[in-house]
Amino acid sequence: LPLAADPASLGRPRFERLQGQIDASAWQAILSKAQQQGLTASAVLLCAFAETLGRWSARPDLSLNLTLFDRRPVHPQIDQVMGDFTSLTLLGYVPVAGDRWVDRARRTQQSLGEALEHRCVGSVSLLRQLARGNGEQQVSMPVVFTSALGVPDGTAAPVDGPFAHQVFGLTQTPQVWLDHQVVEANGGIALNWDRVVGLFPEGLVEAMFDAYLQSLNWL
Image 1 (tube, rainbow, N blue to C red):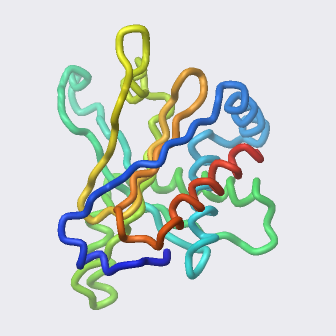
Image 2 (cartoon, helix red, strand yellow):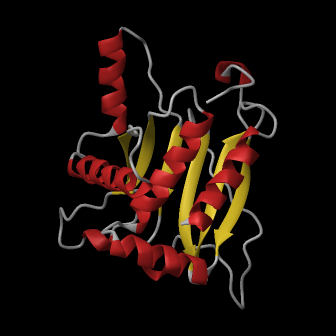
């Protein structure tokens, strides 16, 4: 992606959030079309996100960091344990010229399935191996995708209701430039992009976000 500054020069990065929504009727239409093609909702969103990034990047093929809720059944009472069960895995997106969008989405879903099968090897280990293989001290994959679709009890959804209203939300993670989260909200989905302020050219992330929303509404 084009940058306006060296990430190392920013000191303590500050994040800002872009927010959008797909309403219930539009989301149900997307889910219906995805089901007809044998696609999961997360794969559709992930493909649309990767394609949007590719339009603004120097090359369309790219790698994304995926966050996973990885509470493994290692104990009969594991569901009663409180803690951070988040893990990270890498996913490569390599579009093929001339393919239909649905074909690219299917390949994305296949890659997502393979990443989940190998989630025991986290992204930190993979990045270390890449760095050693390339003779570099450090390799980073600073764009993150988090799908909280299907999280039970609405625990990942915005806190809006008769007794509460969410007034602010933000994720800030070291070595991350852009963090995209998807959560269910009011029958539709809420889409958040948290980006490092001053890192990208002015208006770039806003243009990408608008294009991303348009691509989802096109579906």
